[in-house]
Image (tube, rainbow, N blue to C red; front, side):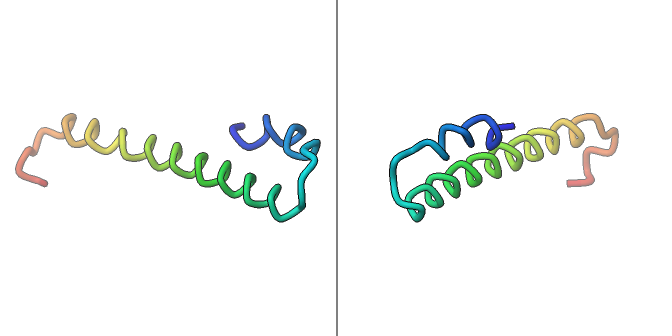
Length: 56
């Protein structure tokens, strides 16, 4: 969804194709960082729910 919203805007930019690709790559990296952050946030929650606290 993060990538799909600005795609029409990205196509309408009046710049070289290489610059458009660079902007698209920055957006993809942002989406990747968001996904990794969501996964990392679920990890401590599962650790706190575990009854065996010595399991590190």
